[in-house]
Amino acid sequence: MRPAPLIAGLLVAAAAVMAVVAFTAGDDDEPAGRAAATAEPTVVAEPAGQAVWVRYGCGSCHTLAAANATGTLGPDLEENLRGMPAAYIKESIVAPGKVAAPGYGTGMMPEDYASRIPPDDLDRLVTFLRQSAR
Image 1: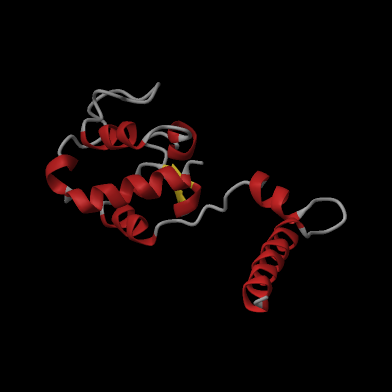
Image 2 (image 1 turned 135 degrees about the vertical axis):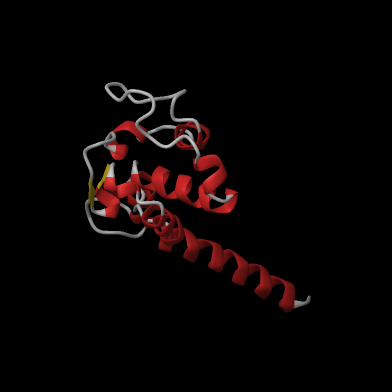
């Protein structure tokens, strides 16, 4: 009889039990695992995207709480972009005339951002806006 495999098996089983206990341990009202699964994700603004926001002066026209912007010339982006896919947000930047927000006519937003904002910066901006509009 070789005890080493038996001990190794017990150690693996004990580690699995400890992982389950750690996952489900929490306060009396809510197990930690359930709380983690149902909690709203924390929005952490993408710093590079926020830098693009600032560089192109987006806050001078738009309201966006995550950027402490209160512009009123354009729509409130948190409200108008909530739940929108990245492709929609990108199109609203590079072809704003196609997807103008209700109450905001075409021609208000510059139409040349596709050529002015480098593709990587545009992706960072879109990520920042999606995170901010949750």
